[in-house]
Structure formats: structure tokens, C-alpha cells
Length: 216
Image: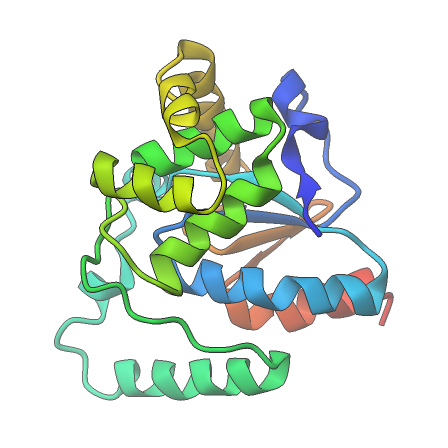
């Protein structure tokens, strides 16, 4: 289902993709919901999304942004509205809700580096499904190396190999490159989508992304 980001980007190219791009971090529940909604959009439009791993913490630092958990603290009515908005999203895209991860916030640095390693090892799609599953379907403390290793291994991945590759300088550098490029293009959080040079932020704008790629 996934269009591998490494098709061009792992070769260091920065040309604008002709496919809609999905910039994701496993630590975002809204990125997970977007991931769940994308297959049906691909089926309806015949267009494949290109998944691009980014480090959300790095984007926040570069843009002086903060997580919703911080920005919504103490704000009256907005968190309640966002719950309503999520319910609308679930109904519109016919996806199941996530299970709140009791260990949130989870440091995703190693998970995102391992996503880049999975690109290079040819198991990107399988890794994405597994990592999202163990973050938001059967949530676990995925910043604990032992827990994460067992979880990913249970999904049929060579977790030890991926985490070892994740420590290589080229892998670390590629994640930094993806993240810096995202900021340079206008991203300030995840999920972020690009269709050509058009930027969309938040799961709710998947509707606009679908309209654009389907020519509506």
C-alpha cells in the first residue's frame, strides 16, 4: 500500500514528488489515524502516497512549536472540540480509533531512525505497520529498547538488525535530512502532507488532499 520514500529521497534527491507525501512520526496519534485512512484514499484515487519519516521533536525544536498536550493544557473547550473533530474524522474515513498509549509521550528517535533503516533494508512497509500497531493499537513503551525489540520481532521483523543499522551515520544523517527538508518546505508538525508544493497540515486536511489528487 505504501509508496516507499526511498525511491528518490534515499538517493539524496530533493525534487518535488509527483505523489502525495505523508510526513509522519510514530509518536503522533493523528499520524496513525491518517495512516489508517490512506489506503482507502489510494483505492478511490488510484494514487499512491509516499511515506516520509521525520523526527517530530526535531521539527518542534526548529519551529519553536510544542505538542498539543502542552498547548491545550488549561484551554477551555478546545480539547473537547478536538475530540468531536476526531469522531467526525473516524466516521468520514471509516477508521477505528486509536488506543491511547499510557506511556505517552514516547521518545521516537530510535523508532524513526529504524524507519530509515527499514527503508534501506527493504522492509519499510512492514516496519511502518508494526511500529504504528505497537504504538496505537496494542500500545507499548516503544522507547524502551527491549520492549520495542520484542514488539517488532513479534511482527516478524529483525528488530536487532534494524536497531543496529539505525545507529549508522548514514541512517542518522538521512533522518536529519528528511526532517530539515520538511521544515524548509513549511512543516511545523505531523501529520503533514505535500501534493507537489502544496502543504496540508493535520488529519482533517486529508479530505482536501484527496480532492486535489483526484482532480476535484
